[in-house]
Length: 405
Image (cartoon, rainbow, N blue to C red; front, side, top):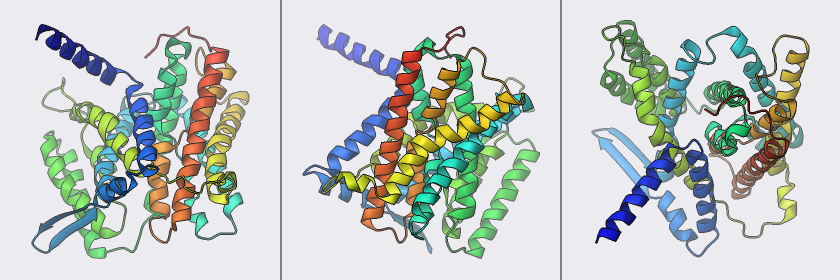
């Protein structure tokens, strides 16, 4: 009995240590994606597909929300993910690494180049297919959790400044993705729902202006906003971003309390260790039945993979390199050019956000071959970026004059 208690205590301690590690989210992402691939290509594929197709319905009078489980994850849980992004963006711009102009220039330019060049590569390879062109934004995304998970595996080999650069660039990347989703991936609009959504936003804004610090007030109005946005034709996850931006960073009645930081801290592990891996598990399942090498060279998977692995590093290095050479910015402290270059390769890990944009791009009118192609391209491009970026950082061993985060 005593040995069982010791064994249970050791497992509990190991789990707690694992959850505190920076790399844990990235490791769970990889595991969830691999598990989805195994299930989809095994005799249990029927179970995997049936699970994601499970109908889930909520009805209050005439208001009905009926979706398969997959869409509850993509539209519902991912709204919480985007809410966390909104919180992080607001904190970084008000108090963090993006609060000064000199801190913004390099990652900001890198994000612009890292979105334009991959999108241009994809567009060039798919310009003859109007359906495929809907996916132009897929390779423009960076998965901050996955990329930071990979870089954290190298410990003190990587300067803190490179991690900060990667995090700041990914935040700008997320902002760009949010704008793209709002403008380019909006379905037929319901003006009645949009009016309700706008009223909800005004209420949230008034709560912020009145310095209301009770998070529950923002959550209650936020639920109404999410339902209204969901019904409006604008993607529901944008409601999460708005809620995150409206939560106040300071409590005027208690200078030691930050409602924003409280919510961010409370959500972080849920998002990193449950929501994002669950999203990966739900969306990464690709059937490899009949897959040939030629299939990887089809315009859609090739455009995505080339955009992520080649376009990201070219775009970021080009825009940042020119800025550094012209004196508008400088290389992150303690970083070598090889380390900086390897970090730009890691920005090609587009996994979570790329899968999300792909689900929007091809959710209507996308054939099974297109859906398989976009996921294959994301997995290939993200995988190459993770492995090559990791190897270059490890082999060239950038300066470690700064301590690890």
